[in-house]
Image (tube, rainbow, N blue to C red; front, top):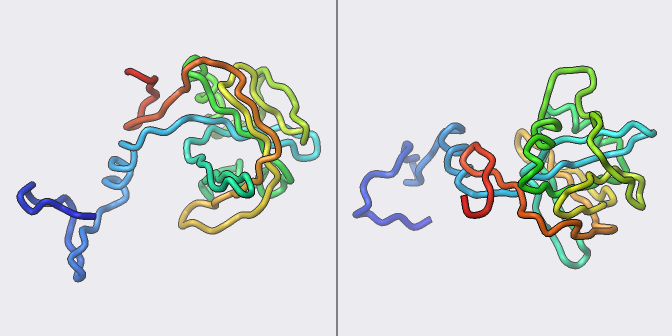
Length: 180
């Protein structure tokens, strides 16, 4: 990263190599300035349907079609993903903030269950949420270590745009919409 020396002091402490070191809170604040979409990732393991909210979802490859999802190692959802052979990704619309919050809940026995959110089953048997902007179904490809997260790679099997509604965004720790 290039820094304008006339712009004032950089935040953080300079290491022996001259690079600026930042702490986790500062990093979170900085990376939170990168607006992301909000999705619900779903699985069907032995007939048990689960889902969790994710904003660390990204396209990975066009040949083959692949995407990645990053999951905190402490998340209960990770256990379900490790067992799954496929998963779904429902990209939420601006009007689905409550759905995002539902799947972000922790701590109750029904954690991760679909909690009466309307869905359909895709070709691989994974749930895809109704009223989402778009949905993708993926075959589980690989799990990679990534610090305190696991990077889940999926090969895209199927996908569709489901709505022209604007997407739900997450920016600087809050839900946002395009133009807000």
